[in-house]
Length: 512
Image 1 (tube, rainbow, N blue to C red):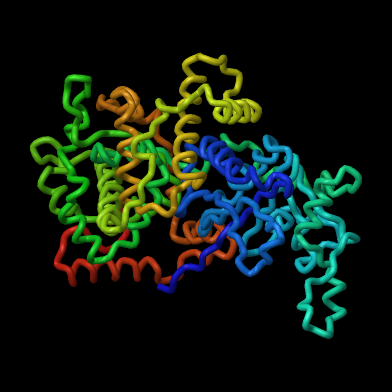
Image 2 (cartoon, rainbow, N blue to C red; image 1 turned 90 degrees about the vertical axis):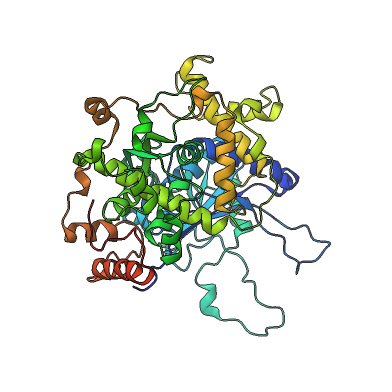
């Protein structure tokens, strides 16, 4: 199959030039804020939402101050939900930081205007919309066409193209000044804004429609890593889905995440009782990620076979639901093993993350208090009373976001760190917590009624091949869906992997 085209969403957050010296601290504050708001959200493609300072230009005059801003890019291939969740996050930034002006676009250009196409002013075209569309004070702004800038022609050029003038060029700096101006009206028409904001109406709760909750059996270290950083699941599943013979060899060793019998999951851990090697946990994935797991049938690698992973007591056959939970957990774990083995030789970067936890946050610092005040302003704590159980739980999530962002100098995903290092640091952070808080509530009782109340319905999976094609095609701009022979080619590749390597772990075809 040909490599799938990548669809990226790019975004930037602009502050007045007078705030230049504050940008590094603003980066950390905004990263912490967004890390908290997105703590339970799973992005389909790694790395997730990222922020950094725009680079310095070494070609500019050393005597001219350089304008810098906060920027980022996210891979939204097959994940249009991610793109609109990013819009929701960025709009929240403009509610809290009143001087912030946000710009966001994707491979198709100004997708906010595309969403509101029915209500666009007649003068708007793809050529003149550049540098005119922003989010400011939570409103959509569209700089009118009568405002233009001189074209930035090379001074050595002696001619210009008059047709370019007619496109209504305006540079970003001028547009930002106009958006912040109290005398120039740049707010987009209400009807246009209604169409655009309708797309993110209901967030953050609406994000649940993007997720699928399932019960899975996984080694304890995998559960700890996911409890700290749920986004690691996307990377692990991607590694499993695109596995090669080297990855399968790692699965046949399971050196870093060795499985133990799933029956261990029903041993209740206490302060004096050793932690079980395998735990049964509620796992949250995106729907596309979950479908990637369950639609591939996969033979148990030898380490799983040895502990009877896919067998019931006395070697009996498992019930269908129990079999699926073990299969999903096994595939996630194999993905962790593949990617950990691949990235563990990479150089490790010293950070303070491995020794930091939510319990070590200085809650008396003015910076942290300001951060908490901003969260309160957005309604993050709802109607909860400070000090209540729910309020405290929410603050602990906020502390984790503050810790991670501060430790990584504002990078939400620490993209410079290897997967192996991020997994180890996630586990370490979790182990710093009291035993009762290290993992979300574990499901120790074999109680189908209880399980059924926690997991998501799988009705959305009941589609024929044509329906699946339509779903994937709608997932993102330019997504081509499945080709006619993609499923067959995928099966053939997996079968050949097993034949060439002589290894367990692959069965052709799609299954549970």
